[in-house]
Image (cartoon, rainbow, N blue to C red; front, side, top):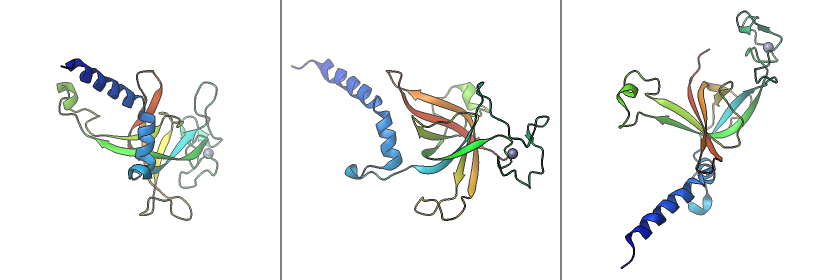
Length: 186
Ligand SMILES: [Zn+2]
Protein backbone atom coordinates (compact mmCIF):
# COMPACT_ATOMS: atom_id res chain seq x y z
CA UNK A 1 0.00 0.00 0.00
CA UNK A 2 1.35 3.40 -0.89
CA UNK A 3 2.03 6.01 1.75
CA UNK A 4 -1.03 8.36 1.85
CA UNK A 5 1.25 11.29 2.63
CA UNK A 6 3.12 11.02 -0.65
CA UNK A 7 0.31 12.46 -2.73
CA UNK A 8 -0.40 15.09 -0.06
CA UNK A 9 3.20 16.24 -0.08
CA UNK A 10 3.32 16.29 -3.87
CA UNK A 11 0.23 18.55 -3.82
CA UNK A 12 2.06 20.95 -1.55
CA UNK A 13 5.05 20.95 -3.88
CA UNK A 14 2.86 21.56 -6.90
CA UNK A 15 1.24 24.55 -5.19
CA UNK A 16 4.62 26.00 -4.30
CA UNK A 17 5.93 25.49 -7.81
CA UNK A 18 2.91 27.20 -9.27
CA UNK A 19 3.19 30.10 -6.86
CA UNK A 20 6.76 30.64 -7.95
CA UNK A 21 5.61 31.06 -11.52
CA UNK A 22 3.07 33.82 -10.97
CA UNK A 23 5.05 36.17 -13.19
CA UNK A 24 4.50 33.81 -16.07
CA UNK A 25 0.83 33.27 -15.23
CA UNK A 26 0.07 36.98 -15.12
CA UNK A 27 1.89 37.42 -18.41
CA UNK A 28 -0.39 34.78 -19.95
CA UNK A 29 -3.50 36.42 -18.51
CA UNK A 30 -2.48 39.81 -19.88
CA UNK A 31 -1.23 38.79 -23.31
CA UNK A 32 -2.80 35.36 -23.85
CA UNK A 33 -1.07 32.22 -25.04
CA UNK A 34 -2.06 30.88 -28.48
CA UNK A 35 -0.52 27.47 -27.76
CA UNK A 36 -3.01 27.02 -24.91
CA UNK A 37 -5.88 28.84 -26.66
CA UNK A 38 -5.75 31.52 -23.99
CA UNK A 39 -7.10 34.90 -25.00
CA UNK A 40 -5.48 38.09 -23.76
CA UNK A 41 -7.31 39.75 -20.88
CA UNK A 42 -5.05 42.72 -20.42
CA UNK A 43 -6.09 46.28 -21.04
CA UNK A 44 -4.03 49.26 -22.11
CA UNK A 45 -3.50 51.77 -19.29
CA UNK A 46 -1.35 54.84 -19.05
CA UNK A 47 0.81 55.25 -15.99
CA UNK A 48 1.34 58.92 -15.34
CA UNK A 49 4.72 58.57 -13.68
CA UNK A 50 5.85 61.71 -11.88
CA UNK A 51 9.47 62.71 -11.98
CA UNK A 52 11.14 62.52 -8.53
CA UNK A 53 13.88 64.41 -6.79
CA UNK A 54 16.55 62.76 -4.60
CA UNK A 55 14.05 62.66 -1.68
CA UNK A 56 11.55 60.84 -3.90
CA UNK A 57 9.31 63.93 -3.91
CA UNK A 58 7.56 64.94 -7.10
CA UNK A 59 9.34 67.67 -9.06
CA UNK A 60 7.14 70.79 -9.29
CA UNK A 61 6.47 72.49 -12.60
CA UNK A 62 7.17 76.21 -12.94
CA UNK A 63 3.40 76.80 -12.97
CA UNK A 64 2.86 75.34 -9.48
CA UNK A 65 1.53 77.61 -6.79
CA UNK A 66 3.06 76.12 -3.62
CA UNK A 67 0.37 77.72 -1.43
CA UNK A 68 -2.38 75.73 -3.07
CA UNK A 69 -0.28 72.76 -4.22
CA UNK A 70 -1.77 73.13 -7.67
CA UNK A 71 -1.10 75.13 -10.82
CA UNK A 72 -1.40 78.86 -10.30
CA UNK A 73 -2.92 79.47 -13.68
CA UNK A 74 -6.49 79.00 -14.71
CA UNK A 75 -7.01 75.21 -15.01
CA UNK A 76 -8.92 75.72 -18.23
CA UNK A 77 -5.69 77.10 -19.68
CA UNK A 78 -3.62 73.96 -19.32
CA UNK A 79 0.09 74.28 -18.78
CA UNK A 80 1.79 72.71 -21.78
CA UNK A 81 4.61 71.32 -19.66
CA UNK A 82 2.58 69.49 -17.03
CA UNK A 83 -0.98 69.27 -18.38
CA UNK A 84 -2.09 71.29 -15.30
CA UNK A 85 -0.81 68.63 -12.89
CA UNK A 86 1.56 71.12 -11.29
CA UNK A 87 4.30 68.46 -11.38
CA UNK A 88 6.44 67.07 -14.16
CA UNK A 89 5.67 63.59 -15.42
CA UNK A 90 6.03 61.08 -18.23
CA UNK A 91 3.17 58.95 -19.53
CA UNK A 92 3.85 55.26 -20.15
CA UNK A 93 1.54 52.85 -21.93
CA UNK A 94 1.35 49.63 -19.91
CA UNK A 95 -0.87 46.56 -20.18
CA UNK A 96 -2.57 45.69 -16.89
CA UNK A 97 -5.52 43.74 -15.58
CA UNK A 98 -8.48 45.56 -14.05
CA UNK A 99 -10.46 43.75 -11.38
CA UNK A 100 -13.38 44.68 -9.14
CA UNK A 101 -12.95 42.85 -5.86
CA UNK A 102 -15.89 42.34 -3.58
CA UNK A 103 -15.78 41.62 0.16
CA UNK A 104 -14.72 38.13 1.13
CA UNK A 105 -17.53 36.05 2.71
CA UNK A 106 -15.27 35.33 5.69
CA UNK A 107 -14.22 38.90 6.37
CA UNK A 108 -14.13 40.00 9.99
CA UNK A 109 -16.89 42.10 11.54
CA UNK A 110 -14.84 45.28 11.53
CA UNK A 111 -14.19 44.93 7.82
CA UNK A 112 -17.80 44.41 6.92
CA UNK A 113 -19.01 47.73 8.38
CA UNK A 114 -18.21 50.91 6.55
CA UNK A 115 -14.97 49.59 5.20
CA UNK A 116 -13.31 51.58 2.45
CA UNK A 117 -12.34 48.26 0.96
CA UNK A 118 -15.95 47.05 0.60
CA UNK A 119 -15.58 47.23 -3.16
CA UNK A 120 -11.96 47.54 -4.07
CA UNK A 121 -11.07 47.99 -7.70
CA UNK A 122 -7.50 46.94 -8.37
CA UNK A 123 -5.19 47.09 -11.33
CA UNK A 124 -2.56 44.36 -11.63
CA UNK A 125 0.74 45.01 -13.38
CA UNK A 126 3.75 42.88 -14.18
CA UNK A 127 6.56 42.84 -11.61
CA UNK A 128 8.86 45.17 -13.55
CA UNK A 129 6.43 48.08 -14.03
CA UNK A 130 7.45 51.35 -12.40
CA UNK A 131 4.49 52.72 -10.43
CA UNK A 132 3.65 53.83 -6.89
CA UNK A 133 1.14 55.83 -4.88
CA UNK A 134 2.46 59.18 -6.12
CA UNK A 135 1.51 58.35 -9.70
CA UNK A 136 -1.85 58.15 -11.45
CA UNK A 137 -3.30 55.47 -13.69
CA UNK A 138 -5.21 56.81 -16.68
CA UNK A 139 -7.69 54.71 -18.59
CA UNK A 140 -7.74 55.72 -22.26
CA UNK A 141 -10.71 55.19 -24.55
CA UNK A 142 -10.06 52.11 -26.67
CA UNK A 143 -11.57 50.67 -29.83
CA UNK A 144 -13.77 47.56 -29.63
CA UNK A 145 -10.66 45.51 -30.37
CA UNK A 146 -9.00 47.00 -27.30
CA UNK A 147 -6.59 49.11 -29.32
CA UNK A 148 -5.85 52.79 -28.99
CA UNK A 149 -7.92 54.81 -31.43
CA UNK A 150 -6.13 56.90 -34.05
CA UNK A 151 -5.44 60.51 -33.18
CA UNK A 152 -4.89 62.10 -29.78
CA UNK A 153 -5.45 59.81 -26.79
CA UNK A 154 -8.65 60.58 -24.91
CA UNK A 155 -8.88 59.74 -21.22
CA UNK A 156 -11.97 57.98 -19.92
CA UNK A 157 -11.07 57.69 -16.24
CA UNK A 158 -8.34 58.86 -13.97
CA UNK A 159 -7.48 56.49 -11.15
CA UNK A 160 -5.85 57.45 -7.89
CA UNK A 161 -3.56 54.77 -6.45
CA UNK A 162 -4.46 54.26 -2.80
CA UNK A 163 -2.03 51.41 -2.19
CA UNK A 164 0.47 49.79 -4.49
CA UNK A 165 1.59 46.42 -3.17
CA UNK A 166 4.50 44.32 -4.36
CA UNK A 167 3.13 40.79 -4.24
CA UNK A 168 5.90 38.34 -3.40
CA UNK A 169 6.14 34.57 -3.35
CA UNK A 170 8.14 32.26 -1.09
CA UNK A 171 11.58 33.31 -2.23
CA UNK A 172 10.77 36.99 -1.80
CA UNK A 173 10.90 37.79 -5.47
CA UNK A 174 8.26 40.26 -6.67
CA UNK A 175 5.67 38.29 -8.68
CA UNK A 176 3.31 41.10 -9.63
CA UNK A 177 2.04 44.48 -8.46
CA UNK A 178 -1.43 45.18 -7.18
CA UNK A 179 -2.60 48.79 -7.17
CA UNK A 180 -5.78 49.40 -5.22
CA UNK A 181 -7.41 52.33 -6.96
CA UNK A 182 -10.36 54.69 -6.75
CA UNK A 183 -11.68 57.07 -9.35
CA UNK A 184 -10.09 60.50 -9.11
CA UNK A 185 -12.27 63.48 -9.96
CA UNK A 186 -9.79 66.27 -9.26
ZN1 LIG B 1 2.93 73.26 -15.41
